Structures are given as C-alpha cells and as structure tokens.
Image 1 (cartoon, rainbow, N blue to C red):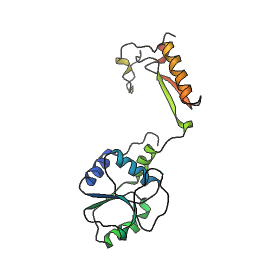
Image 2 (cartoon, rainbow, N blue to C red; image 1 turned 90 degrees about the vertical axis):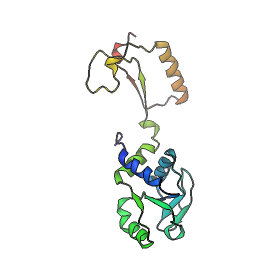
Image 3 (cartoon, rainbow, N blue to C red; image 1 turned 45 degrees about the vertical axis):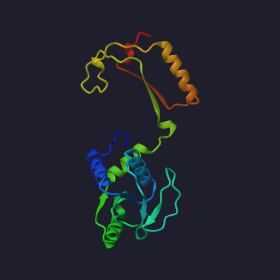
Image 4 (tube, rainbow, N blue to C red; image 1 turned 120 degrees about the horizontal axis):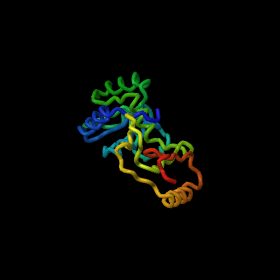
Length: 191
C-alpha cells in the first residue's frame, strides 16, 4: 500500500466535475473526508462544507468548514463528491434522489483510501532519509529509475556528508528510523 497511487483519470474526472459548480460539498465527515478536503484544497477546489445524513458534532483536525445535514443545505448549482465509504451508498444515494438531486461524483473506494494514505502524516519511526553518495553506476540495470548508468561521475565529499549528518541529528533530535546510503552505486565512492 505504501506505493499505491490514486487513479489519475478519476482525479481528473473529479476535478472536472468540481469545476462545473459554484458550490462543492463533500458527503461524509470523518478522517478520510478530511484528507479529501485537504487534497481538494491542494488542487485549488473550494469546498463549502460537509454533508452528513445526521447532525455531526465531531471535532475536525485539518480545517473547520461547515457541516450540514442534507435537509439543511441549498443544492442549487451545487456538486457533491461522495467521500463516504461504499457501504453507506444504499442510504446516501436514495436520500439524494429523494431531494431530486442526481448530479454527484462517486469516488472509488480505492481512491478514497489512497488519497487518505498519501496525505496522512507518517510516524517518525516509518520515515527514512536517503543520501546519494554518488550519482553514477557501473551497472546497466533495466529497472534503474535513477538513470545512474547515464550520469557523469559525482562523489559527495566526506566533509559535506559530515556537515549534513550533524545538521540532520540537530533537526531530528538524533532520532531517525533509517538512513539509506544510495546512488548510483554507493560502493563506487572512493571514501
């Protein structure tokens, strides 16, 4: 799951959908919907508020926007992005249709999960620092995503490495889960 990426075509469709309306709402109001709000903020989409099936008094952590019950919100020139879990659709979609509202965007469960995963802060013990000791490599691996076999020789100096590690220790209070010495091929370094 660490390397899962949201489906870009669905993101494009969602942003296109949001661009059609004066008012955008997110249906649902929990952790994943807060990460969806954060994602939409990053994309420049203004969200007017959350819509819930019942009055929700939960405190939000990311950013406070109004929470509305479906009966309390004016849906004219509005688009709703359904961010609630799929298991709630049998209750949400009939409520929307009962109000005569049929234009909503249904996110896949996969994208709801991966957007939240990508924006959720990781605990310090799951973080690592990568340091390129060299950029070049003497191998020609087909799957190399650093293009190291094409790079001219570059060596990180021992003085720069010491300076960077000292500063990293200061910034992290001497607590980093892992430091990865990478490249290119780090064993090509002279020192």
